[in-house]
Length: 224
Image 1 (cartoon, rainbow, N blue to C red):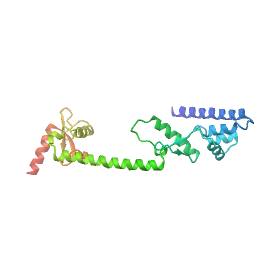
Image 2: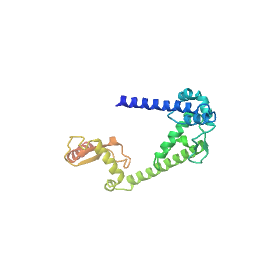
Image 3: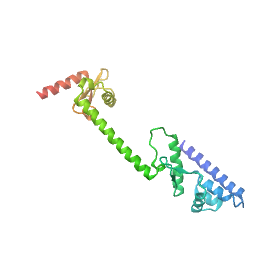
């Protein structure tokens, strides 16, 4: 299938090249039409610059200079709407791809910095840093609440613990990590209790009831 895809791609490129040359021949000596065609074809991603040289006798630099005088695709900062001028053809084509991707994205998803001017990028980074700091403060406050003001029984009913528990059980493939028992209800054992809400996965173990009781019995025996 890969070979067929490559062959199809090659055929399409050949067809494109053929139509490009045919268009240049149709333009003939219509001097006023040739620059417009060069500008158009230069700004299409599918057209390699070498094809323009073959069709119109215009080098890549010459084609880009003509296209710059009559840009079809224009770009503005998505923040302040200041004009973004592509410095070369490679940048122009990249901006086109980025804009297309941005149009396909959903609200809340990150947008490439290519479509944001430097001043707006700086503001966005500062806001993102501030938002991250705020999120950290909220998390720390929540962890402190679960550690200092909440009983262990109440903590086991919190969404944070339920999510962590689900991850541990999935990691254990829903089997006891001591005896491989898969038919009994599983518990998630804490090796340490001081990190409620931000447990490390290595501190947690999926155990069946029998092994969990045995585990605690061994701990109590060692402690005594």
